[in-house]
Image (cartoon, rainbow, N blue to C red; front, side):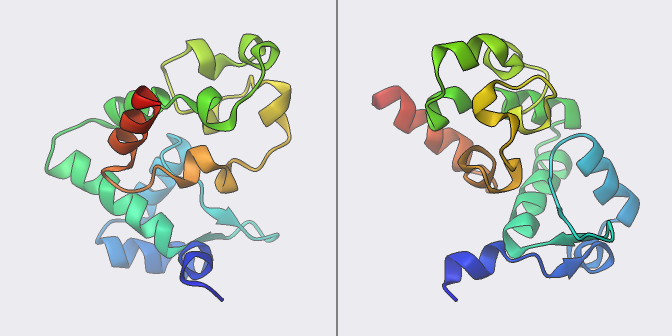
Length: 147
C-alpha cells in the first residue's frame, strides 16, 4: 500500500475523528450537512474518516477559529473552484451544471450536475480530493491562471 492510498483509507470512526480534532461529533455532522466534508459511509451508514479527511477538517477548523471565516464563507470559497476546468467537462455539461454559474456551495454538494458528474463519486473526484489542505485552493488557481 502506498502512502497516497493509506492517507485516503477511511479508518477513523466519527467519535475518534472528533477526539482527534477536539470537537464534538455534532460539529462533524454539521460540517457534513454543510458540504465541507464527505466522509466515507459504510453499508451500515456509519461514517469513517481518512487521514486526508482529518487534514481537511484541521484546515476548516483553522479557518473558522483562527482566521474567523464563517462556514458560509468557506462554502463560497470552495464554490469558486473551477471544477469544470479540472475535470474538463463539455460545454453541454457546463450548461446543465449549477456549479458552473453558481457560487453558493462546492460542486460536490450540488444536486444539479451535468452528465459528466451525475454518476461520479465526488469523494474520489480530483476536485474534492485536491482541495483538502489550506494551500490547495490558492495553488490550484495559480496553476489554472498561468496555464
